Length: 296
Length: 232
Image (cartoon, rainbow over all chains, first blue to last red; front, side, top):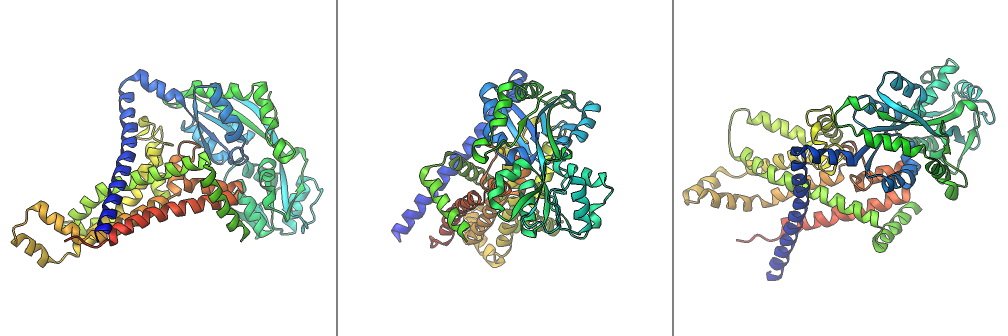
């Protein structure tokens, strides 16, 4: 009984101390934040240290950002990059609303609209890879080696399972463009599946459903080991080029936008040595580059 | 099945070799969840006691809303907090979006109704006669509160355990308001989502074992507190 009581008291004491310690760190942060808002000079200092980058899932899921770009950038510049990895559609929307400082996306047509509207500036091409059609190794629809437009036509005619991102991402926009080019509404097809999720999850769904899927090469290569029954079925068509651009959000959108940081990030990405690092990424692990340098 | 074993070995490996990032993420998860549940407890229990012991107009309606709040989907909480914290939103000037504080806020929002609701249920169950008796014996307010708290200890700790369970399991809101930023707002649940979408199932499994052990330890401790024999 005594021992029990002793034990429980110790445990309570431990928890209280622990919680108090946690509470303190939280308070410290809050206390740290309040004076910063009162003195304008300090606020600027704080703002300038954080840079919100809205980007696509493919740059994060492939590891390019976390392993190469962000560490290199933070080493050279006094900014802390906050990467928000979402679909290209959402990333661009964050730019339009001024919720991000800099964007890195891959839907040139949609991006051009933002450039024309003055939502973004300093729009720079930085890299490319390509989209590929991945599907069951047995290729039940028989589209291997076809041109993309023929392949899509045949997938539709054969009522083959096609798994779409369905999330307004760059890849999804590309896919819709390909259907549109051959005047087909893919949703008419009963075996057309929309996941509404990122590339990695969509590949997993395609794998389970033994369907075809349009993917960027980087994400597929990075996860290839998980899909032993799937292969690249169509590749190398010019229509499948996947081009990435970086751009600064117009600083007039909001007072809190860190334009200096955004500018530094854009200029950083087009530097030759960074371009080389991008192309070098993945060579060791996958035997080929996941992204290729491509400045203007 | 191999994946499970792989995941487990990987988890043990990560813990033994002291994978710095995993430690950081685990520590951050613990800090954020405990801060959230502590604040929820400090606000929720007094409010629950008040709601349980007092009678006023609109009390039932308030209880309905609190009970709905217990089932508030975290993504809904996340969405609302995001809108408030946007640069263009009413609290935008605080620059709280994509910070650990934002995650704490979201977790408080989803756990507070549980704390208030379950505490108030416990206090509503107290026998009227007992309340009278305590009064008759001339107990001060503080003394009666102490007696009542002792009486409802099991239920209150159950509320804290349920609230903690919600907080540590929460992923939808943490993803939205935290952004899963490496070294800043990446916690165990959001890491698991990310590793799955990266196709790294072994790492995801390893992290799942870590978060379960964490939940186990804390819940074990809270249950221990709850079940220890009463002091007279």
